[in-house]
Image (cartoon, rainbow, N blue to C red):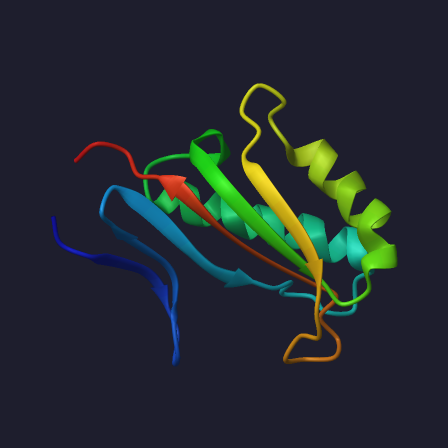
Amino acid sequence: MGIMRLAPEARLSGATIGAGCIWLAGQVADDSSLDTEGQTADILAQIDALLAEAGTDKRALLSVTIVLTDIKEAPAMNRAWDRWLDPAHKPARMTIQAPLVDRAWRVEITGVALAPPP
């Protein structure tokens, strides 16, 4: 199987498909003026779009890593996450605190999903 790259940018692809998986690049909010809950919702919509472009959806997510610039914002992030999550298809998840490249970003999310059969 070859490698397919989705949503290419100057330094990265938004997602890469290979070895039966979809590897999501770290996604950040398009609107960095939003609060943590808003940025999370923005990012989750981007993930939905990338997975749809790959021919699947959030039910195929195997693992998600969420980076918050302030771990105290986890409840706000979780409000958006809980609205978006399919309770019957919960991925493994890790949430950590770390600085992000742009100080306006409050959240970055990456993950791995199972690719649909060719």
